[in-house]
Length: 279
Image (cartoon, rainbow, N blue to C red; front, side, top):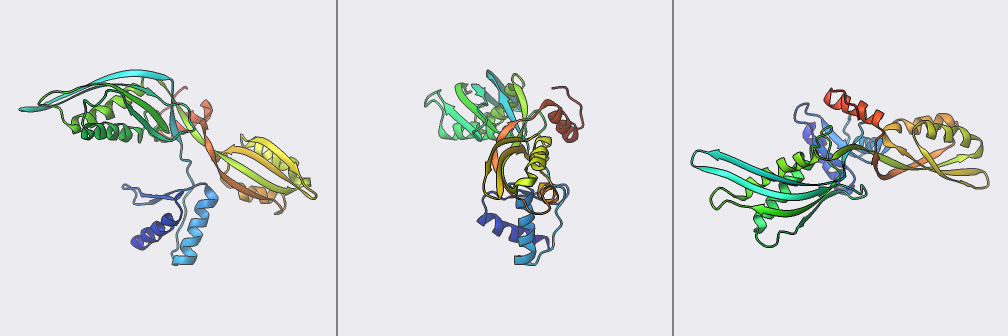
């Protein structure tokens, strides 16, 4: 049943930090985030073998991210009045996003000790929550570098919640001043194959927007080291078997996030948001 499946998946996730589990509140489906199609197939197989739970995997989806290019300084004033008491928060910060080899929020407070820890925690929380829903296509922002430059409080109307809300709004407004790009996961491939299939395998990698980094020759086989976007690698294990008559094998792992070509990004945004954009 559903509860048993969730409990079993949580046990697998406790063993495997690269496996993330969440439930879609609208559809009720369990969404698994892993290191690729093969990784998720192994998880499904373990559910069947170890926990006797039958499950069907849907079509894999790429876990895109959004990236910030450039740097800006933004000042946000959040002011609301509710009857007697209101909400007031004012902050100024510098935002940048590169390089893309870091993940998460780097938050630096250079205002000094004029803010309590509760206020600082709330500001950081507001920035982090805003990063979960990027302005380009709703994907998580990969990383952000934020330097808090100035804050202004009201003696009555300011509180930590007001600054959390202000930070959330401010992050999205600051992003509108910068170039936001779609980032796609790039996978590292190591393919071992008899020499006679290397040409076909190499051509197939290139067709998948991949790049051959190195080919090492051994006595009776060769090792191809390459990189390719995850979106182009669904079904690759089966394709490789076909290209090599079942004699080649592949090891695949995450390498990094990289900027998506505009034509691909436009397709992804259209599928996600239902609107056509020209990047």
